[in-house]
Image (cartoon, rainbow, N blue to C red):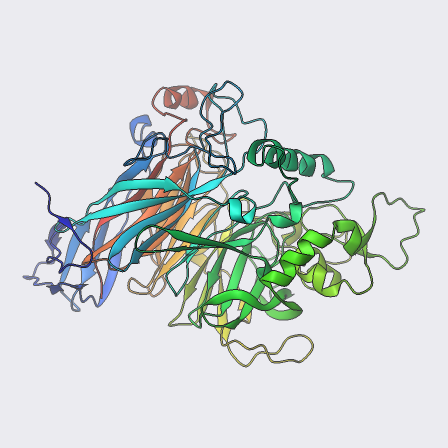
Length: 621
């Protein structure tokens, strides 16, 4: 019988996963709190070599934990599934991937079958007063019950799962589960990656691709999204407002599994991949996912509270040559957009429309009089001509931060900006750029062109240095010791394009392609990267040691699937975990050979997707 651990109880010595040591007799130090490690090293695994390996999520990698300069232990890593989206956990009467309306009634698809999301994303494994909980995102509805693409978006949600931990092996088990009710904040729209705050809450996101209104451009898409919310979520008892979506969401979990939810309107509306709060408990950075997006920073008025603060947008001042192939480099300067509270911005969201904030030229020809209008690219590759209406500066700063940033001179040329990770000790930030393309390339057709680097379809992970004593472009001191001042790509974190190989890979399989999720472990001195690639037939999870620059593949996920939910827990009662999910399995790349697709389709359940973790790692202290 397994001995299930009460997290409030005393833990056992970590013994799981030992596979060997160096030629000397290693006596690695373990204790109730884990191992005192001098350094760790990941021993990577090969890419999958056949259809059986390509059709499963697995790890054959190892972690080597040093307890002195010469003594170490190797531990085998393994991929473990906590639950799949088709599973029922505990007393939950519905499958984990079930979607709900505002009354928390289960939704059905067009064939009267349960509407399930095959897209688990952001995770937060939280220890709340000795009780272990996992908050998980369901990002979007990929396919419906007949296997075809979902015809429209669905209102999405999050799961709260109670977790038990084995006292000896560290194995985690999902014991109870419920869907979180977001009706108090008008529902949830496309929650993607996530992070954990220094005060032990879950910080989620909303990517508002559909609800990012562009007059004359995507009005039909916006209306389609609003109709989905009106008909499916509110059941036509309420009219959805696009300015209620696209915010950072915070979930506080209590020890009895009750919870509190907030949307932080003062952090601004965007297509947020995620936000990460720095060690000062006030400064936060955003991943703004899409075309022609900005880099934003939020500085809260008080610690442990994201309810009021100042929003800033960065300008890229390139220091590398135009057309640089190394991802480019730049110094960053910061424009202050405005200061507001959650309550103020929510009030503006309910009071104003796009037309109240901007004048807009929907169609521009060679004879159009554009005097008084500013040409911008913000949220798409198309040029918009806008004029800010009198007195709407602060409203625009929070309801339309990307447009307002472009309007006042900040850079909105980044492309597919994804996850963010923070290295507190070295005061560095890591930013995922899935594809270096579009606005990041030299653009002779548009006067505003800050970023001028070479296209790289395999993407990169950028590094930024953080410091205090930095002033904004108006000369006012920014009240933060964590202001990013430059941006560049470490050589090992740059993707490499190749001609399509036998398996359809168009990026080097021994390098990261299309970085998405990123997480930094202080104890391991390692940046972890999960891929969301249209260029690798199988996506991988990578470990990059910042001291040795060694890059190691530590997991492979089901072909066509995306690696999501990355979170590293350095020590939980003598065990460490790398949380890792998979979504939209068998969503193959365009270059995957047809014969390989046919073989893989027989082995993969595309209606399923796991929430899980990479285990076998001792807790580190």
